[in-house]
Image (cartoon, rainbow, N blue to C red; front, side, top):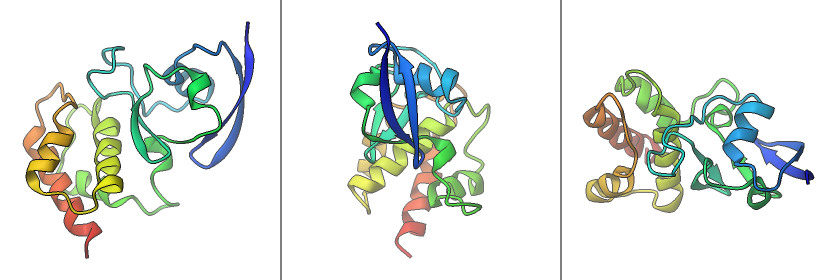
Length: 156
């Protein structure tokens, strides 16, 4: 039986009528037309579906809509402030850290979550945090450079 849910996505209140067990990823992509989060593995292993829930990273492919209701959800589409990109987005562009782009939004949001939790992580902490994210193109060295660059930009 469908239920009505209130979501705050990228700062906007949204009302969704859907099955309570429907994955947040489906709601974001199909109902709200936010295509940044991608369906990769569908098992919470690759990170392509990553979003921020209350500032913390979450695999949206696994999260039922009922568990996201009433919480602040940020997708890649809501990360920039107007025309000003987030420092992690700027760093990914500066380091040419995306190739096919499939993993990029998840990588960026995961890095933002890291900086939310630990504003000045050591290199080992960056590697450990980003390790579960999968890049099909193998752009890991450029991704690591981008996260390091973002760290310096955030601490200017």
